[in-house]
Image 1 (cartoon, rainbow, N blue to C red):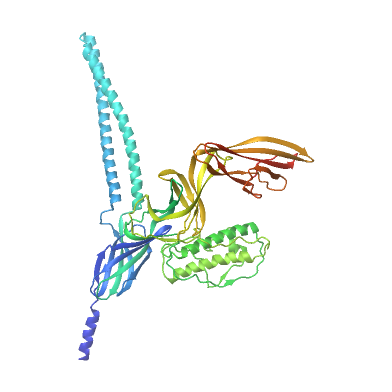
Image 2: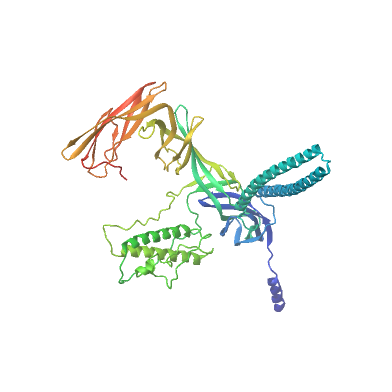
Length: 609
């Protein structure tokens, strides 16, 4: 009896557990766009029955970074494995690709029609040549026989020349049309290669193997894609009566991942995507003494190179899906460097074995992270040893800054769902529309231009950090020009331009000049007049700016002798001057000042750096 039970149990154990297969594309529900990549979240609905399920997620994008794929289980779901696979594409291409392919086919048909037409023109020209030869021979025979029909000969000759001229003109037109079609065909082929990556058409799928309890459930599939980036841009909209400014903060998004994002929760980030949760492990640093001469110039250059490699490696460590470092060969976990050749290589360059800055195949797991960390330790070791080598304490080593090139790491979560198809052109989406406090004024710089510009000083009173980016400026409904917005944190002020005020003009002239010699020095005096003209009906306040020469040393003494009216700001260090004056309606205002320059009488003033 016991043997029978054991046999039954053995047979039951030999029966494999079957998994239900579900094939579906899922739905893209959320996207975070970084600088060069995007993190995409898809939700895959699972069947209600309990048991094992193999979910095949289709229509993954062309720009998928395969090593980035991971799955998050919903309630009552346990994820057993996740993998990707490629297979030849058997589905229709997306609409943009189909449109370009149809265009290429149509251009090919037009080219073939033109080629056939040119072949017919060539045959016609051959026939006309034969007809011309026949006409010449027949005319000679008729002339010799005394039966020449001059009228018929003239008509036939005119026919030959007329038809030949028409054929030649059409051939030239056909050649020109063919050249245009060839150029258009090449452009369409380049666009198609850009959209499809230029490779063979394959489709990518993810296979997610899960165990689930009974009831409705889902699993979230997350992955990184390339071909996605964004940059900030702005519209500055000032009211016509200058009572306020609205700053429209936009994002110009490039989305060429190969999949459409329809009605998704959109997040924009300046951070670097990270798939590693642990900090890099710090290894011991071993040093020893060696007889070596250190070239300080080479040392400083190599230190900068090593620090740049270290920063690049640290930035990319978090993205295990895309990068793998070429770690130096190391026998143990202790990091050391003992001589200049260890650091720089025998030829004076940075040793290739330290970090290398190269990235190879995709890999996953703790071993890959360890390779990154060994490389980071090796690079940091080389930089530290350069710090430890004897040098001039009054000349500190270059700063070892590990800050990101992007400065602040900012995340913007858009309040409404957004749709972004995969296209080759940039797409504009609005992050926020921000009313801002504004101080409006006009600026004249007659030493540079006769135009007077309108400006506004804005204060970022919102809860949004503004990144630097280009701006289009509007005054009322009128576009007045382009400018830029600097990076502005919360509470920070910045200035925007509002274009030229056509009712004002500025000019600058040298009214008088005199000089004299006193002792061994020459003293020159200059009288300048800055004139503002107002052609409008209202008095206007203007900030008028000018500058004094700035001496690089004490050999030249520059003095502002007098000013009418008195300058509001007189920069002793930079020599910049500013007056705030009111220009009467349909009138003018003059600012006059005198400066003196004293220098060695045997020397001449020239421009500085």
